[in-house]
Length: 565
Image (cartoon, rainbow, N blue to C red; front, side, top):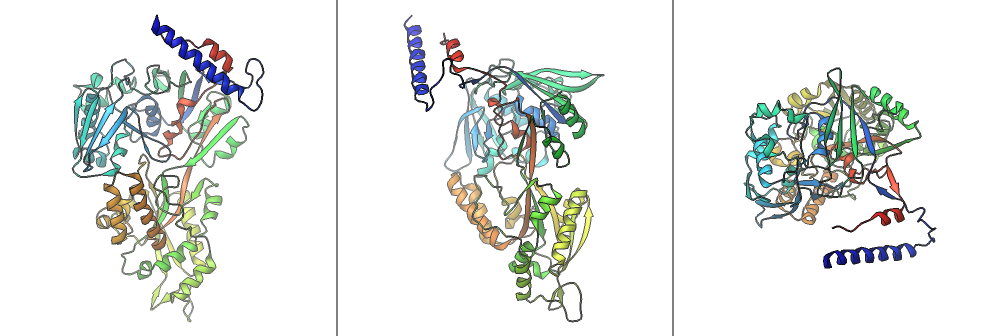
């Protein structure tokens, strides 16, 4: 009886406090608290996905975005990341790092349970990591090899520890993967897991759980999820989320126009004008984790001018990147000034942009000794070396158009560029990896990597066989990147990455062009939606717990509030 009275007193005092706050508003409130409606549980959301379901399993969705989108709501990882790329606890309520940076200890939330009611334990994490290492699972090779070097042990039911061979600050990136329930999959071979019914009736620990499949003519056309009331964080307002699958974006848009769905997962540049005509649509646009840039082969002896920073800067000044964004990309990109994404915790925004300035670029080329030969010709020359080279680019309509525009811009400077279009895989394998290119127009995809870690692309150790395709040989930069990889303090890492970005902006070992953007359409009847910078398109659901369709007056909510027993 004392316990009950104490709770009633707490609720009573809370109501008084709310009343005082409301009375302190600038405008007097009318009886019934009109205008003070608050979100309440209820309602649903439906979305069109372009593509088809394969397997709803976080270890099997690496190559199917629509599976990954759904899995992001069903499954949880130890860690999640905010829109700046900073780690937040998900299944893990706390973690600690040893002084030498080699051991990471995690404590799993006591109230974390699977959708079938079983507790989430350390053994589930150990089991999932074991599958990531297994050669029989279709895990990307780099991820499998990484986990083979990491030991993980369950210390007790809710505590576990990872041991790394050496300090590695971006380690938390690898803990964002969804955890699988050991009690449902233990004893199955990788082949049996791949073929398991679990992948179409998944059990996770996320905010929404599997409800049913929509099947027509023996084909899966959709999947329904329902709110999981046992979720360990704030419960979602939405009761249901429905995904419907469509073969292409036109079919998805038609379904949206008919009112069959309330959102479209991705709006392309070609579809954007049609979507904008719908006055009941909310359009959200944000940066994708991709960077378009031009690699210059700094180690090609036939092209000595690429070794000269002033020539690289002149080439950058000669590019009308804004024209490319506005006319070829429909405005759906952000001007890039460096290899670290804006709004990331490591981004340094005062490195100085290189503006389009063809006049200054021409003067720089002349000052460097490159002039049009007296006997005529289109290419500037110096000591018998002409400003001529080949630009290899992806064989797509968009990137061919971009390459042609780059060719025209540089021609105005007296730089002659021949174009070569190849399939993207061939560009990577036969040109970049073999270092046989002269210049290359590419798009780096850094999806699902919130930690910027520029080491693989710009460190000296990656020149020969790694991803330092530009072959930038800068010892000072390499030291910054080495230090940032072994320091756990984010302010210290940020300082080293600031130094790296300043050096990059001064040297321009490659020419950044733009960051593509992602557009997402949602009906105005869905409230609370917001979208920050993305590390994957599924991050559009980052604040899904705040989405709502129903509201009620605050007075009604308070009147129906009851103290916990």
